Length: 90
Image 1 (cartoon, rainbow, N blue to C red):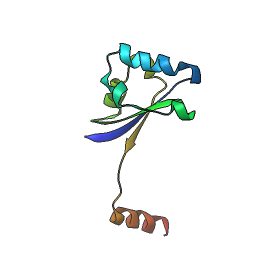
Image 2 (cartoon, rainbow, N blue to C red):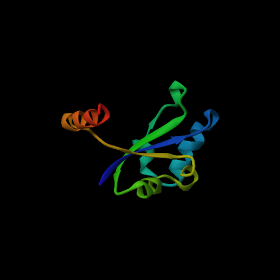
Image 3 (spheres, rainbow, N blue to C red):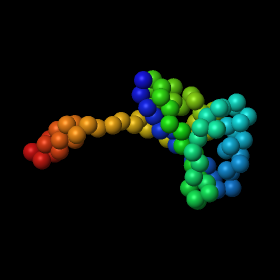
Image 4 (cartoon, helix red, strand yellow):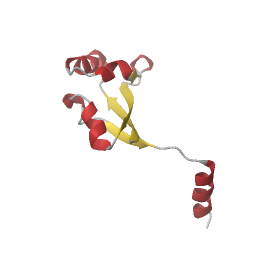
């Protein structure tokens, strides 16, 4: 399994509409999403552990899928960072 960040942008006047789409789709992810609207960042973010980007996108209600950005997340160990740095310093 991989970890993905699902980012769903929406227009400033559409905050409630975006939430309503999640609710109408029966998505329990509405209650697991973090929303930036009150700080002027009109996006919702969800972190999901799934097999691939297609599965991550399928979590979202169909109406919100086209504008969503799906990013696979990863961690680096100190050894990995050292190796990456050594490749860039050659």
